[in-house]
Structure formats: structure tokens, C-alpha cells
Image (tube, rainbow, N blue to C red; front, side, top):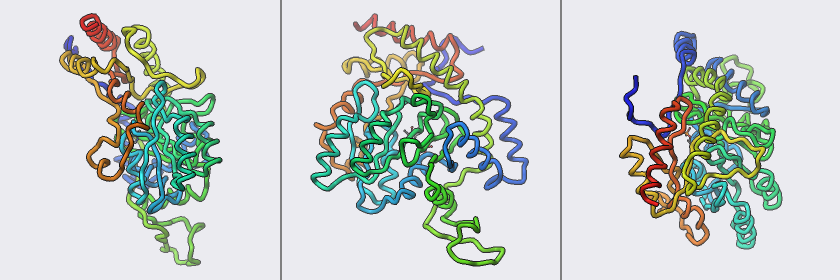
Length: 391
Ligand SMILES: *Cc1c(COP(=O)(O)O)cnc(C)c1O
């Protein structure tokens, strides 16, 4: 039995006996890497998102780098993203030598604000500093305004990468997030706390065959092993070809096996996270603000549960949760506040007001598949007790 007030983390992975069995079987098989499991995992991801091509890699960070490289991002190009995300959404641009700039978020969805995006695009067109790539993030799994962003990309000629690290299991109307209908590439993560986990892992979804072939070799040192795609006409049985400067971003068979068995539980995970989230929205103090969906037909994978409180109460509430043995987090610290980014990007806070507001008010409270009813109501009671005390 768990102790009555034992620590409740803000998130936690969930593994069952089948996951463990699959992992052990992979270890006993003929391949620990570069075998059939990574292909099977990619194929299963392809089917559930109805994408044309999927490449699995060892993280979403590698996947973002690979996607940027496949879209031809290079030195002195410009990549835009939002500040409220994990820094990997911007780091991928720097890996390619590009410059980074940030677009503010929307005050209700916490995703990229398309009005501010349009304004910034018009201004940047005049100044000839348009981005080559825009990385949009479906924060907490809440789908972005993909149609509008796609239309802007046609008008201003930039490419779109969806950072869907939070959003495997989300739906944009009837389209599963992962399907690259409105973008050039979608990237997702199988890190420990994501919709499903392979311990570490990531994937790129694309409908472009050329980009797919690039993605496949970029993760294996740039070496092409498929004779159909050789540059040189070499008939030797042993021949393979390094065609680009790649990295070792491969996903091992162990990780892939875990991913395959976790993917079978995706629907279940998302359903439970949604149920817990809806109860939070119903029962938590009315002074709290919640993330809004753009459209009632969208489904969020509910990667994290973000609440917004008056900024004078935020730190107090955070400390109160920790004092009551309840985990909390702030997702995310605006990227431009990091010491590293202060060195490489100059921002004007006047254009980032909502990111600043968000950062002063947001807390992520516990939400995970294995959360018990008791743990869930304890979180609700502790938060409501806090508001009784301080309001
Ligand atoms: C987790 C995360 C990443 C990075 O994923 P890894 O698989 O850990 O590299 C990128 N972007 C966002 C928004 C994330 O939450």
C-alpha cells in the first residue's frame, strides 16, 4: 500500500508486463540495433497517422535536426519558433547554422499567435528577413491553427515543421496529428513523459519521398545502403555510399520494441489523460484559467496539464504543492531567457508579451496515465485549499 501522502510526481511513464516482455524478447533476438523492430515501429506509426513515410530516430531533438537538414536549412538562413517550448524546437536551427527568432504565443491556446505571425511576416518581408522554416509546437497536445499557418506559408514561402512532441494521439478535426497534410515534416518524441515512451526516441513524418530518403540516411552517418538510391553505378555486393554528412541518430531495437508495445496503448493513455483533465477543469477553483482549444472538434493528447493563476500567487502555489508532496513544473521557461540564448538571439520583449504573461502565471500540475483517483482528488483538494487560504 502506498502511504497516504506519498509524493505524486507531475508526470510519470507507464509500463506493463507486455512492454517488459517485448523489451526482453528484443534483447534475446538476433538484432539489438538496425533490425526489423525499428522498421515495424515506423510502419505502425505510419498507419496510425496515415502518413506516407516515417523515420524513427533516437530522439525528437535528432528528428528536428534531421528535418531541418532535409529541408535544406543552412548557414545564415532564418528559423522561427515560439519561446514557450523545450529548447530543442529552436536548437535544431542553430545546429544548421541558421539564425533564430521568436513569434509570440496566443493568450488562450498557448500556441503560436497567427495574428502576430502575420504581422511579423509582413514586416520581415519588407526587411528581407523572412524565415526559411517555421517550427510550430502543439503545446500540451493542443493542435495549432494548421490551416491558417499553411496558408501563410504559401504566401510568404516558408517551410513548416510541426513539433508534435506533445501531440501523438491528438486530432485536428479528423486528422491525426503526425499526418503532414499541413506541413513539410512532423516530429514527435518518445521520451519518458510523452504520449508513449520508448525510453528515448523520436520520429519524423513526411509525405515527401526525397526528404524521407534523406532522413533515413542522415540518421546513419549519411550512408546509403539501398542500391536503388546509389549515386555511383557500382555493382559490388559490398558497396554502400556516404552521400551526406550524417550523424548516428538511430533508434535501437530495444527502444523500438518498447515503442511498438507502448503504441498499442496510445488511445487508452490519451483517453485517461482527457478524463482526468476534464475533472480538473470541473472541480478546480474558478479563479484558475485553463488552456483553450481552437475548435471543439480537436482532441488534445493532454501531455501536460497547465493551469494559470494570478502572478502574485504563482510561486506561492508552486511551493505549497511541493510542501504538500505534490510535483509541479513550469512548462516552459521562455527560451530567450536562457543564458545561452541571450548570447545568440536578441529579442524585443514588447513583441513577446503573451509569452512573458504565460511564464509568470503557468504551472503544470500532475497528470499521468497511472494516476489513481485518490491521488487526483488529493491534488484538487490541496489546490482548492490553497485558494481558500489566499483569496
Ligand atoms: C520533449 C520535447 C522535445 C525533445 O524531445 P527529445 O525526444 O527528448 O529529444 C522537443 N520539443 C518539445 C516540445 C518537447 O516537449
